[in-house]
Amino acid sequence: MKPKLIIHGGFFSESGTNDDVKRAKQNALREIVERSYAHLENHPAVETVAYAVSLLEDCDLFNAGTGSQIQSDGKIRMSAAIMDGTTSKFAGVINIEDVRNPVYVAQSLLHYEDSVLGGPEALSFARGIGVEHYNPETAQRRQEFEEKSAATARTGTVGCVALDANGCLAAATSTGGKGFEMPGRISDSATVAGNYANAFAAVSCTGVGEDIVSGAVAAKIVTRVTDGLSLGEAARKTLGELKAFDGFAGIIGISARGEIYHLDSHKYMVWAAFSSGVETF
Image 1 (cartoon, rainbow, N blue to C red):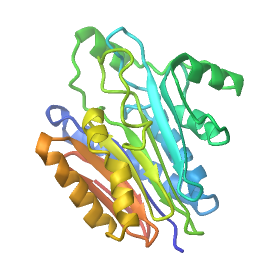
Image 2 (cartoon, rainbow, N blue to C red; image 1 turned 180 degrees about the vertical axis):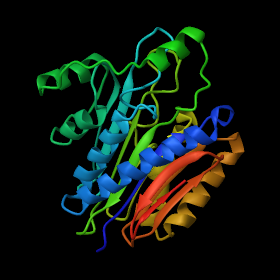
Image 3 (cartoon, helix red, strand yellow; image 1 turned 90 degrees about the vertical axis):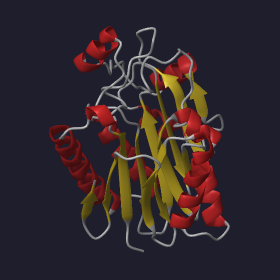
């Protein structure tokens, strides 16, 4: 099986899109997808998706990890999830604070029966496994918060889907939220609506979390592939169902048959893929 990998960096805000920002994001995605694919050649899919998302979290062009959005009470709360398509094990952290890479905390939870934790308990678990304090705030995010302006060219959940040489699939997704939201809001990223994988397909989502949850997007696409649809057919059917309430979502996915696919309901989702070479938008 030839390994394949695709990542996303969420959406541009249409008002903030310009050539310089687009080039910066494309360059970052190109570098990250190349590094992640090199990792995939010698590591399983479930390890690679965590690694790829950690690189995206570390890049402040994207809204996850460093550079996450600030909520209405002035705090940053992040969510991340990972799912191993081979074992069908899902793990995630919801509204975790003061860590550098939420995806690695989620990855650690794959080994526990209680594998989805939220808030202070998620942070307590992270400290218990040796994750050090880290402030993910950037000067840009603080300025946006103080100006109470959510319009930013950096907005976007991040994610990765991988198919390794053994035919195993995995997906991971991480977000810093939508910015200025009510404290306690839960996004799609650490739910099966936003991140899902089994032996047939794996999907990571970005967009408006409430819309993605309402459409059960990731789980529905994977289920439809399991039931016999191609990945493209499943994605188009599922995102088509969001039109009833003008849902806003984008997806990346890979099937066990080697199909690699991306689709968005609105323009400006940014992504990069690596199979025979690098492809970006």
